[in-house]
Length: 521
Image 1 (cartoon, helix red, strand yellow):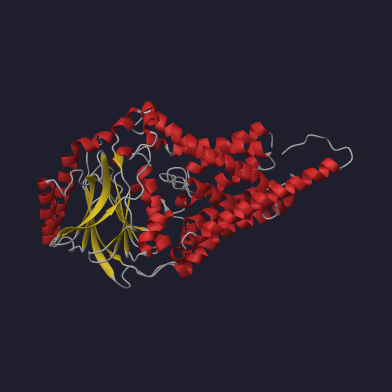
Image 2 (cartoon, rainbow, N blue to C red):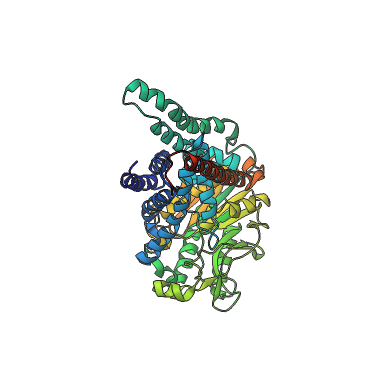
C-alpha cells in the first residue's frame, strides 16, 4: 500500500479503536482497529512501520485520554497521549517483520501483548489505560481473563483482528469465488476467537450468587459539587456529605427497608480531613460506625510520612475498636499525585505547583480484622495486574476499588475504570465493588456482570446488596504473570527470527547476478 494511504488507514484504525471502549463499548471495534493497523503496516519497511505506529497511537490515545486535560489544560493531555503513542512506533516496526512470517496472526497477537507489557511498566511504573483487554469486559473474550489474565485477552483480540487482516491480504482476484476462498481462513479465525470465548465460559462460569457463602455490603457515594480540581478545597464538605448519606442508610436499616450490612465502604478521599488526628473528623466517623454496627472502610488522605508529603489510604474502622487495618495506595500516579522532574513539570503546567507529593505504601492490599479478608486497591491501581492479583493471592475473598473521579468531570474516565473492575472480577473469580465519591459506584459479580450501580454522576447514592464470597483461585491467579512472560518471549523470538530471515534474504539478493547494491530494510 502506498505510504500516504497507509498513513490515512492508520489514523482511521486508531479512531476506530476508541469505539471499543466505554462509553461506546462496541467491543468488536477492537478487532477492526487491529486489522486496519495490520493492513497499514503490511509489506512496509521497518521505518515506515514505526512512523505508521506513531500515527496510529496518536489517533488512538489523543481522543481516548482527553479526560486527562479536563481541568488542567491541553498540555499534560497532549504530552501523555504523545508519550503513549511512542510505544506504537515499536509496535508498527515489529508488525512489518512479524507479518512476513507464516501463521503471522499468532505473532501479531503476541506483539500486542509485548507492547502493553512495556507500556504498563515503564517509565514511572507505566500507564495501563487503553489495553485491549479492558475493552472486552462485556464480550465473550472476557472469559480468557480467568485462564491467563488481561494479557491473554489482549492476545486473543490481536489474534482475531490479525485474522481479519489476513483475510484482506489474501484477496488477489476481484471475482467472488476467488474472494470467498481468500477470505475463508482469516474470517474463520476472527469468528473463532469470540466463539471460543463463549465456549470457555461454560466450564469457567462461577456458580450462582447465592451458592455458598454470601455477605451483605453497602456502598455509600456521598456526592459533591462538580468543582473539578477545587473539590479538595472543601474537604470538610466531602466528609459531611458521606456522613449524612451514611446516616440515611442507618435510618433505612433501622426501618427495615434494607438489610443489615456486614461491611460498609466509602470511596477514596471520602475524608480529606485526617480522621486519625482531627478530633472532629474522628468523632464523626466513630459515631457513624457505631450507628451502623458494622465495619466501615474509610478512604482518607493522611499527612506524612515526611514534610510536604501525604498518603492515600483505606482504613478499616471497627464499631468497637475504632481504626484498625490500613492500606496505603502503592502506586501513586506520576504527574498527578506526585511530580517527577518537578522544575520541568511546573514549567509545563501551573497545576504541578499545587500537587503535594504522595508517598506509595507497601504490602499486598489485604485487609484483615473485618468480617472476612478484603482486598483493597485505590483508583488507577485497578489497571495494574499485580496490584489487584496480590491481595487475592494473600487470601482476599472480596475486592474493593475505592476511587474518586471528581477531577475528571462527566468524561468517560469513570466508565472506562468500571470496565477494568469488571474484567478483574472474571480474572480473579471475586465479587468486585467499585465505590466513588461522584460515580460510577457499582457491585460486580464474579462473572463480570454488574449487579447494581449508582445513578447519574455527581449525585449522592447508596447501594445495598448481598453478594457471594469466594476463596477458590482461578487459573489466572495461580499462573500470575507467566502467560504474559511467555507471550512476550514469543514476540521477541518473532522479532529475532524475522530479522534473521530478512537479513538472509537481503544477502541472497545482494549475491544474485544483477542485484542492486545498497538495498536496505
